Image (cartoon, rainbow, N blue to C red):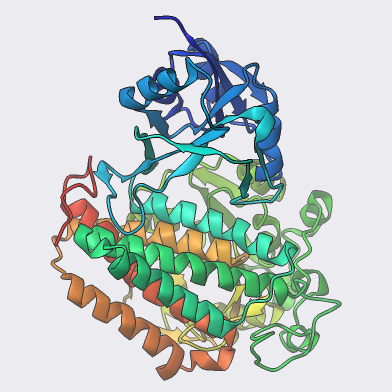
Length: 567
């Protein structure tokens, strides 16, 4: 069969999993042009081995990137695809028939058959979801915007019947990953466009998008999947607004420019200079500055405890790709006799950085959080262990309290330590997030975790006490990072439920979802943190629903996680 005078342009970034089937579905086209956005897997090698022409260009603006890509095509007619899309044989024949004679139109829209796992999303606005994919390159262009650019083409416009199959989401985890990424771009677009959005408008649009997909577009016919995909469309609006709010009410990460504000809708929970001084926090730490290696190495291990002696404590830090956080963490615990970093197969320079800062480093893959922590603490050389994550910081005031607790005839075998948790530069004061004390300091021979995959329970023999001064916990860089963490944690939570043989209904999950939001925002005072509190309460609710969705996925065919979930 003669190849058709058509250029198929495929945009890729780390698409080794998808590129082969995509290219094979358009083997009948004369040119297959792959525009690769700095892939770090073997996408490029695979594409070239399959006979595609590959050009490399970093995407900085989706509209501009697509326009550049189409301009590289050698043929007048272009079919635009993503790597997770496939052209059906029926569509291929239809395109061939149209292009063998000059079509009466400048481009044609094509129905997109979206899939979650192996489940074809027929309702809720997901099908036919037609898009302009076949066009004359000299009569087509995108607006040059970051995300979801509009297409411009003079009439007439045709319509084809054959489908492009879009394997958009392997499972709910990937679905939420893309939701997170796309809403970040969308929020930036709102800001760059000078858009004005209000909380009331965001709430109205969130509900409207959900109801439109669920009722008017008959998402209910998809059962539970339809409900979740309607929720997805509503949450797209909500999550975009939260990120837009964050961008338009951003605060510097401490230091100069910080407003010494009370809790408000615009600056809820921000940390002022006064807060830092009250905590005796070093200026560099409050500002988020990272010490250079030589500076940190020179200070590490300097005796600063009472009497010039280091405290009999092993600081155990669990790390995975924590090069950005680790120096600050280590700098705040140089008073301890041992700093032990347990690395979980980091791919950045976490290990080299930790070693350069004088820490002892052991490597072990985490397969079970409770078991991993127990193993880590057993490697400590000192009788007392202070367990930290790389995003936690010990203030000078807390240091003094720890040293006193472990050297002056300790009354307890373990101590809970309160934590100040930050999202970006904002301290979450309410909603159950503070003091949020955890068992962090303990005698290693009197302490163990249950061997659970996520959120293991801790046990200290003969009881424990409490310290007053808090850890500072820089847990999330921003709302995007917060959502990504919740997505990972709900996957672990769902796996735990599934392995325990837990039974849960949709009604129970929905009740827990609403209960968590109401409890966090109203009963635990989250409303006092303004928009920050509303964000945290929303994520608490999302945690429950996402955990249930993934649990339900696992309860069915794991190779086709969504296929049988109905009713």
